[in-house]
Image (cartoon, rainbow, N blue to C red; front, side, top):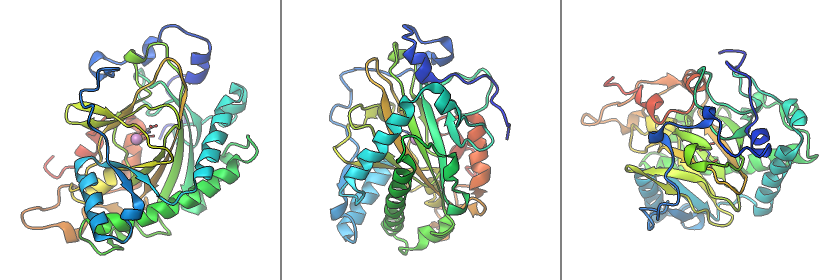
Length: 353
Ligand code: OGA
Ligand code: NI
């Protein structure tokens, strides 16, 4: 992978803070990709499911709820998920403070496309690509052998501690969810975790997204349409500002976050492992003229050096393997080169192609 970005990096937050009144053409999306804003949301009634995890863990009816949410939406919000609410506030607040630091402080952590670790403003290395209206900080969390807190922000002072504490709790939540997903597919509780490479070998990373306010939100996106490449994603959304939209048919449903909820969605590897029973659903982020937005996406991924293909127990004569196996490190490389591009990446693994 390239060691350098194809063009100089511009911090979108710094750009936004100059008070620009128009969006530079680098961020103006072609008209078919632009968001539809403030439409009396055609799906006003539509919302992604909200599950009280107290009704899910260890309950047969809970498995049905999970299965339905995963089949119909690929997304759900979780309340009663077990992650400490005060810790959620603290880690999000610390990240907000980090992004408020002067640009020179943040640039000390500037990332490059070879690992993506650090502070950055673009996904993909395609020259002249249209860019998204956001900055981010990306760090590796699991396996702990690749965790390198010295590459994490050092200000505000407690941020590393909060990241570790939050990471530990979310990791436990993911372990529990993987077991539940496994059962909801009719598999042994540990089947999916085994297929992901085992608790000690799975990968995880954290991307904190910063979506600066934008003078012309109808022309651009905070994050272009994509499906998440990995296993499952746990999103801690902004407490005040919405922005996440989930694909529903030809349209988009804006997630209205419930207080203290976490959002979970299925990534491409779950689509592959479940042989398409569960789908990694496309999503995107819209921005707005008045408020910055912060979100934390915790990506829980398979072990990166083993082939990931449909779980054998799910294959039948009438439903043979739909996807060709691929290692996650190879898969991620494709994504890192191309940037967000809907569902093109996972579709390229279809056996029929
Ligand atoms: C992501 C993502 C959504 C959000 O980081 O992959 O989809 O609301 N984030 O920031
Ligand atoms: Ni995503």
